[in-house]
Length: 387
Ligand code: HEC
Ligand SMILES: [Cu+2]
Image (cartoon, rainbow, N blue to C red):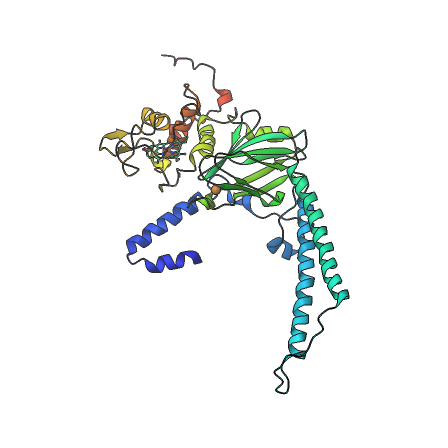
């Protein structure tokens, strides 16, 4: 990457270089960590290869077309004026250059009513046209239809959480075709910005304030969704997918928090993507917190030098009371952990969310050690093993 070049040459030691490389790998590894890369590819239905590579993304919302045509109108008006002005300028440069040693300026006419009226009125008409067109589209983007559904969007360093009216939560945005939606956007920390190019919709997310974005998706498919306001060194991690389903049933099948046809560890993986992936990796490289694929059963030390073994009790405590034991290398003894508590967010009941997360961490260490029985197949109460 070009922007890194000055930093790289300024660093002397190979150790520092290695650290920078590791940091970059951490950032890269988390790219698409929660959403597979293929989801984020540009998909444009056109036979024109130029469009495919360089032109606009798909038009997937009701107002996308007006935004694009307004853009093209303004572009062509600017193009015509650019060419005309440069042509006249070049012509004048040649015709009125200093000739035959004459230095004194030629007398010029002081006034030409026709030209002055023309150059005032013509651009005004164009500007008023741009305003009227722009205001109309703006209106369309800002005034939600009354039958809109509301989805809560929470942006944080570095990820997204989408909460649907029925309480389901996902790390990708799932919408239904032709169902207008109002997004209520909130930030947990700093300034972020919601952007789905295919919808031509972009809205800043300001800490301490609710902002809204209105969309009426009219084309099923998978689109890019990203943060468009630099929010820290993991800013590029804040990208995920926006999936527009053809029907409400189709969406329900994809957003259900705890799927009966999932096993415990699969639910745990789902919870990990929603709540933990912003700080933890599962590729052995530490992020803000330790790499969680190394956690299960490991023998570690707290910042205070106390030894621990990462069993169920330790993991549960780490999730509910992160500051109780700070992992060595992740803060000072007795300090407040950078990890927030998940008390009240993940259920603590036996067989609940936290047990699912634990099953996932175990699975990462040793896939054979956890049951892959689907939740729906599990009996309500496990019969005692026959002696
Ligand atoms: C805001 C960042 C952040 C988020 C979000 C976060 N963690 Fe952490 N986590 C940390 C940090 C930092 C540490 C190390 C300091 C500590 O022990 O509190 C840590 C430590 C841990 C540990 C101890 C790891 C070890 O190897 O000893 C576990 C287990 C853990 N987190 C699980 C989770 C789970 C599960 C979630 C999601 C439900 C989660 N964390 C979400 C930042 C985070
Ligand atoms: Cu951001």
